Length: 151
Image (cartoon, rainbow, N blue to C red; front, side, top):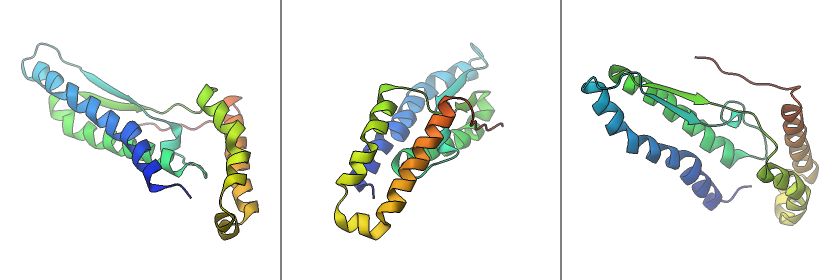
């Protein structure tokens, strides 16, 4: 359903933006480690629970967050010799203007899909996916649904 350009834009911000920031600071952290000026440097990447437990109707976002987690997991091993700790924080959904806006627009977005798309996926399936996403977000916000990942 999601256009390729949307995937590219979301990956550029959520994945490549994080990679760019890490790469900008790595020479500083590695230099401090080798000079023994400062040990115990940490990189903490703020990702999302969507990277651990993706939901329907969010494939571009979930893919970008999953890539961010994969990058962070790999970077952890690469930087171990420098004693640089690398981890992710994966918060659940929180009430933000972006989320509120998405919840408000969801039904209208589904209605605006081309007839061919609605027929291909089945209008009921599309609404069910949005409804499940909506219910999951509400459950996460009120604390009745939680996800965690421990390393």
